[in-house]
Image (cartoon, rainbow, N blue to C red):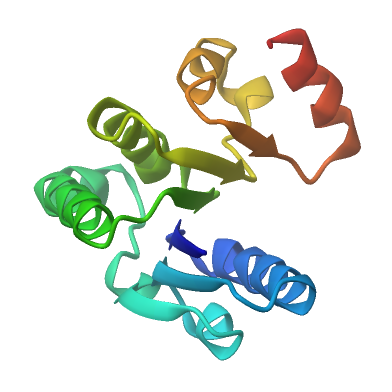
Amino acid sequence: MKFFVSTGEASGDLHLSYLVKSVKARYKDVDFVGVAGEKSQKEGVEILQDINELAIMGFTEVLKKYKFLKQKAYEYLQYIKDNQIKNVILVDYGGFNVKFLELLKNEIKDIKVFYYIPPKVWIWGEKRVEKLRLADYIMVIFPWEVDFYKKHN
């Protein structure tokens, strides 16, 4: 089984590396490929795009890189289609990964998307929960988030 992974910052890469290590310890025939960093690579993730190339700080930089990030999302989508990958793990990086989640679900009907450390909708507003409902599975790191997501289905 192959998973495409997407994270965009050092903390997400750290959490992804732990997840990959844990999954690989339990399942031998599993591969990971995608957007990650050095820590995940050390655990066996094949890097298509290094997170250092995606680093964004501040609102103006987001605007400058909008076209670039949109193009990357379509490149990743095409890679997933070309390689018939049926499972995607999104880690943190809500500004990109929420849009990528929407794109994946609109373009590939039978894809399974796992969102690990989704955006903090309890901070940013409950409207964002609607988009996160597209994910097949949501995995949180704070115990009290479980109740929040159950409440919002």
